[in-house]
Image (cartoon, helix red, strand yellow):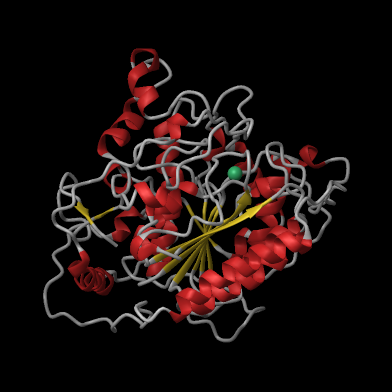
Length: 501
Ligand SMILES: [Zn+2]
């Protein structure tokens, strides 16, 4: 692994990648409460498997630096972040109005250390983006991240802060276009909503659609304004198997890569799309799920892998361990090594588990129709004359002092084993890129509050059912609610710039 950056010696696959893996040993101690299906312990189980399969020695293992208030406020509303920081299980009964307002309580309970948990999982994803931006790795992994349902000022579906949106905002400092791919069984609504009106981020979500949380993700929802055709949704039905899934994933993602040409890719690897998930209803094997990682990896574009859903925790650990092997280009023995959570994996103690014989409700004609529709959208994009697909101008060398007192590396734990690099060119680069983007900025636009739809949908993630269809975000929510720091980090955090990306 002598590659100094993202330029890999040869492709399309099979070449070793430099991988940075983010893990906080504390993350497994956070506890959503008795009976709650979301169990951060699965991250610790994944880590134990990685350790005993000998994968840790093949990658850089980093403890994430916790995201700070101001980092979270690049996307989230200040008062929401303050609420998350201050709320405790002891004080929550005095805050009933706030709990309701921010959708915290049922699916998204208040628990001990909630804010630290958010800081940790967001810190890993943003830290991964920083590493990729610096060309210090080819693939960054944060299995604790991937909480794709969180909104600007609202928790949703076990998610409090949206680490993916934050990581994409970080990647946009360097990359003109970023691709987001979501293979969780649930629609990646929080990420889609954040970037619904921009052509700089394409979101593609493969998910169960129809009477299922969060209710959004119709094939007809494709983005709005400049973002039209830059949000893609692949609605699927129960029981989809590996072969059916790949019959969509490969042609669609192949075309997306060809047409959109992203500078970086974020892949949300929610493991609730696996066969036998406690909340899911798909029938993917671990190999089938990992095929998506393998395929996205094959394009040799800087790749951030994050976790997400996954509620049969032994299978989540299996899946993310196997996918870490895929990232590294190491095939793992099916026979599981002895380790502290070995008893979870009986009676077979194997890495792989057979999918079930459940019915695949996705018929061939339905799949063909979905694929044709998405390829049609993409070909519209390909032939649209106004779409600016030219590469970014090369980095400009500025002969000015970089006065930034703080920089992206402030996130790094000084005790970590990360090699120190000179970030100065990067922060100058970021500023140049931002200036290039500035003409689109609408000074008159205030922060738009997102349409308050989530609370109106009698929805429970736990049951997966929705009683109401969510409104089409496109028609009544034309503005992305995204903040971007104006100038790296030397501006006060209470003066964010709302960027029209
Ligand atoms: Zn999910």
